[in-house]
Amino acid sequence: MDVNVERAEDVLTHKRLLELARDPAQRPAFAVRAVQVSPIVDGNQTDADSHTAGEEVASRLLNRQQSIHPPPAFGSSTNLEALALEASKSQGQDQDSTSDNVRSLYRPMHEITFSTIDKPKLLSELTCLLGEIGLNIQEAHAFSTNDGYSLDVFVVVGWHAEETEDLIEELKKEISKIEETQAWSTSHSWSSPVENMQIVENSTADHVAIPTDGASEWEIDIKLLDFGNKVASGSYGDLYRGTYCSQDVAIKVLKPERVNVDMQREFAQEVYIMRKVRHKNVVQFIGACTKPPRLCIVTEFMSGGSVYDYLHKHKGIFKLPALVGVAMDVSKGMSYLHQNNIIHRDLKTANLLMDENGMVKVADFGVARVKVQSGVMTAETGTYRWMAPEVIEHKPYDHKADVFSFGILLWELLTGKIPYEYLTPLQAAVGVVQKVKLLVISP
Image 1 (cartoon, rainbow, N blue to C red):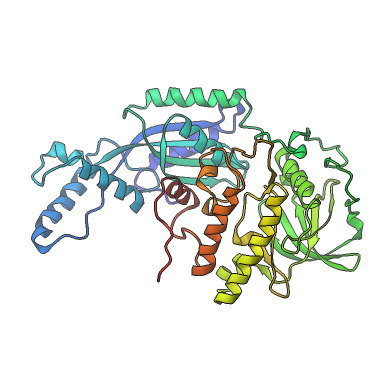
Image 2 (cartoon, rainbow, N blue to C red):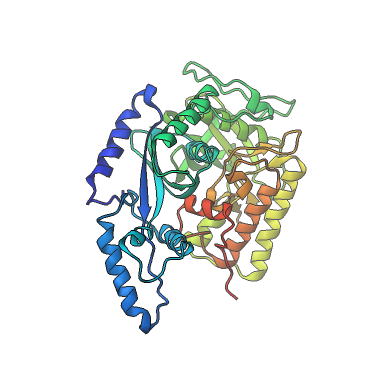
């Protein structure tokens, strides 16, 4: 962690919160304090202004030790410094300011640190909580411990006073509201059949129930799967290349120790959606094993790997005709999904796979959803760098959220760069919501 070693109290605070989080009655443990960030010096100074600029730097360094509030625990990025500079400009200070005015160069903010059990969608719940009380996130740092706990640090603005007592009480009220609806422990409800079914975490259960709709049999006996090399590994599962009845397949296996109610629900959702779709630009579903401890989904094997790996790991470049072909393949696959009322919700280059002929297919339906009757849905999922602003803000959304992600994807294909590569995912999300122009294409 990039902690300022000169201020050991930050480390002690984080340690205390992590210890409190081990007590279910204390979750989520949190701490609030006022912080401030000094503005950056404008680099466009003339020689005539150099003496004034030097005095300003010296004054600022001197006063940093005399600041009313400490800086954020993880330092201050150029983003925060720029915000502070903008705030100081708006105050209309003149060059011959007194020591009182030097203080006003600092923009007071609040730092809110949470610790609880780490789980999927935790960041979305915390950002939503802060938004409910009118706070704007300026920067966020998220960490996970090896033993399954989280430490999430937010720098926010928008509270009406520097004092923290009222803010702490408001946070407690919002947390109690969430606890009443059990939002800390369950996923948001949806309208597709798999969302409404009751999945009970039970080690003696002999399978994960998948809703039936008269479709052909798709359950696979795991004994018929021949596992080959491990292709990829993540926090919640491993991907293998293998064979099934002499067919080359990809086998996604969930890690038994990470399977919980939410994981079972997403597994059931992916199976429910994948068995309903069949299109040349959508990865073909073969079947699934729903009997613990080895829950797995079997699809056709895509030997070309992902578009993300091609661009960013192998430094590949799509020439214009090939780039247009990729875009056409994706648009055809997504058009088919939308025509069948399926919103992917996590469209990105990592979920675009290529076969041996270079055809691109849409994959990974773990967070996809069947569109509800009203045509709009709420709550956040997917990956921040490709996510539409209405999804980030938990506003109602529809298939157009995929269209936004498709636009980010096209930018990535054209530039060969990771979207917002110099920002953390949460910083990128804040920029998207605030309509900051972050992505450009050089002529």
